[in-house]
Image 1 (spheres, one colour):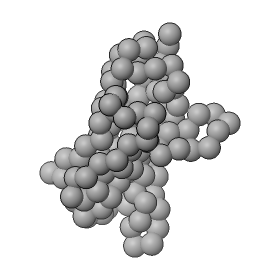
Image 2 (tube, rainbow, N blue to C red):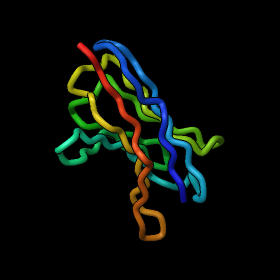
Image 3 (spheres, rainbow, N blue to C red):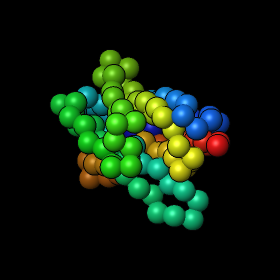
Image 4 (cartoon, helix red, strand yellow):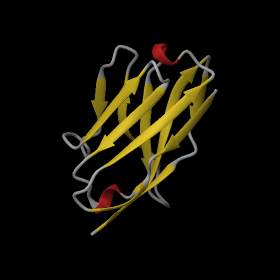
Length: 115
C-alpha cells in the first residue's frame, strides 16, 4: 500500500489550495480515509474524514472552509482548502486508518500560509 500526497505550497491568507493523495495497493473505494495535519513540535491532528459511502466529517477549525472528497476511478483522495488562515500552516498527511489491521500514512505535503 502506498499513499502519495501532493499539492502543498505557499499561499497568502484568504487563498486556496487543493491537496491530492494518490493511492495504490488497496481497494480504494472500500476504505475510509483521513487527512491529518501537524505543526512542528505539536501532535498530529485529524482534519477531515471521508467514508466509503462518501460521508464526511470535519474538525471544527476547518468546517465551512475545507472539503474532503474522493475519486474512486482515480484512487485519489482530495482536500480542497479555501479561506486559508496563517494557523493552517502545517504538514498535511493523508491516512488510511485500517487496511488489514495496519495504518498507512502518506509522506506529508507542506502548506504555508503567509499573512
